Amino acid sequence: MSLNRGQLSLLITLFSMSIIVLVLYNISLGQGKGEEDEYIVEMMLAEEDIDELIEEKERLMEEMANAEPIKSHMAYNETAKPSYGNPEPLQTLEELMAEKEANSDSEELTDVLSDGEYAARVKELKKETGGSQTKTW
Image (tube, rainbow, N blue to C red; front, side, top):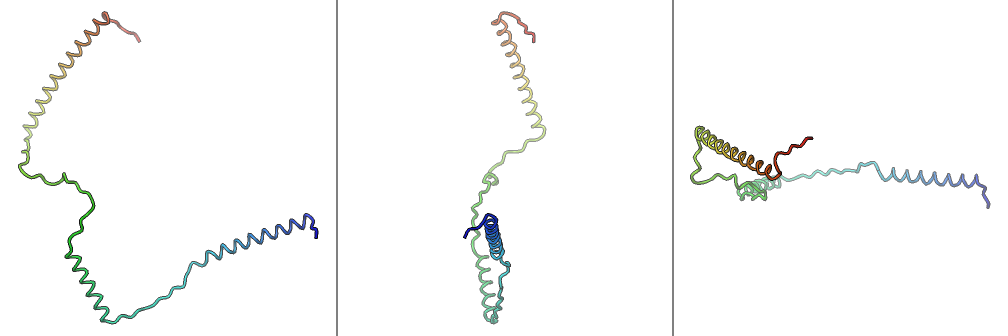
């Protein structure tokens, strides 16, 4: 049986379209409705069983209350512990101001000395380079 080109193209189109329709149909079946049948079964407990469950719950609560506290694996700041012994006495405002003035006086002296040392160093460098040389930018 020999088929011409038009008949072959028609068959190929029909088969490919049928495959696509079947695949889409299977996908829609695979998703399902998403609802499953649920069955609810009610259980009747005797009053004795309910009393036993309540007593067991109370006993467990008492055991938990009497149990040792759980040691944590969390780290904590050990330096935040209060210090023991004689703490250092607090300074008054006058003492703090006097200390600040003493520190500022010593800083002024070091500044003067460092300025003098700087000036001496500049003079030495001038002598080494041969006098005053000025650069123009």
